[in-house]
Image 1 (cartoon, rainbow, N blue to C red):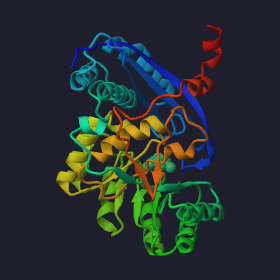
Image 2 (image 1 turned 45 degrees about the vertical axis):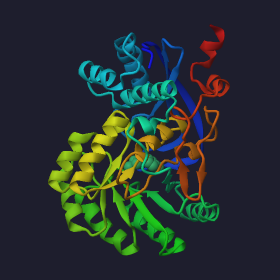
Image 3 (image 1 turned 135 degrees about the vertical axis):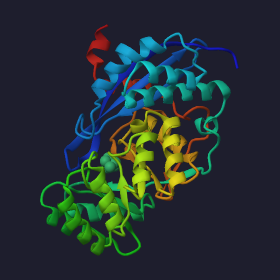
Length: 380
Ligand code: MUC
Ligand code: MG
C-alpha cells in the first residue's frame, strides 16, 4: 500500500425532512440533521463519514452543530498531515488531544475506514476482521404518536416483508396511557410479533416499577432505558426485578460503561451505537465486553442517514454476537438521501454492502441541494 496522508477534512451540515413526525419522550422530530464528513487523502481518495444526533441536544450532549465545530476547529487541524492509512494511530491521537466528541470521532474514523477500503479494494467489514453475517435484521420504530396509525404502519411493513419487530417510543405523558397504547398495538399485531419499548430515560424508578410490570403483562419483549442514564442502581434493580430484559442505551457509551454495567448486572442487553462509542473499533470493543459478560447485544441507531447506518452495519456485521438484531432503519425514515446507492432492505434485513470501503458514494447534487449553507456556497 502506497503511503497517503490526510490533506483536508470538511464537515457539512445537511438537513433532510422525515417521512412523518417521529415522536420520542423528549422531542418530536420533523427533520434530521446529518454531519457529512469528507476526508481527502494525498493519493486522491476521498473517504466519507457521518454523525447525527436526535432532536439536536434532546438525546445527549452533542449536537450536529457542536460536532461540526469540534471537527473544524480541533480534529481537522490535528489530523491533517497524519498517515491516512493508520486508523488506530489517527484515533489514538484524536483520543489524546480531544476529550469526548464521540460523534465527531465516529464520523472521522468511518471516513478513514472508507478511504482505506477503497485503497485496498476491500469492504470496511473485511478491515474489521471479516463479517460473520451478510445481512442484518432491522426493526422499525412506531412513533407517529397515534396507536391506530402505528398499527396500520406495522401491518403494512409486515406485508411488504420490510420489518417484523417493532419498537415503540414511550415515556411522554401519562405512563398508564403509554401502557394502554403499547397493549393496543401488541394485541393488534399478535403473539408472533416482538414489541419492544424505549422510554428514553423518562421515568423515575417508582414509575418504571409500576409501568414495567404492566408492560410485561401486555407481552412486551424488551424495555430500553426506562430511567435516567446516571441512575445506574435503579437500572440494576429493575433488571434484577423483572423477567423482561432491560436494555441500556443512554447509560452505555463505550467499553468502560460496558464493564461497569456488566459488573453491576445493571442491564440484560446493550444498545451499541458507533456514535456513542466514538467509532467502529470502539463499538467492537464495547461489544466484546458485553459478550464476555454474557450480555445480549443490539445494533442501535442515532437515526443516521445512509452513510452512518452503513458504517454501523459494517461494524455490526463483524460482531460475533448480535442476539437482538438491529434498528438500522434511519435511511427509511428520511424523505430523501445524499448517496447514489441507497441501502437495500429485503426480507426484513439490511444487506451489508460488499463493495470497497463503505460501498456507497455521495450524490454531490443532492448534497449541494440539502446542505444548510447552500446559499453561501452558491454565492462563493
Ligand atoms: C434511541 O433512543 O434509541 C432509535 C430508534 C428510534 O426511533 O430512536 C432512536 C433513539
Ligand atoms: Mg434508545
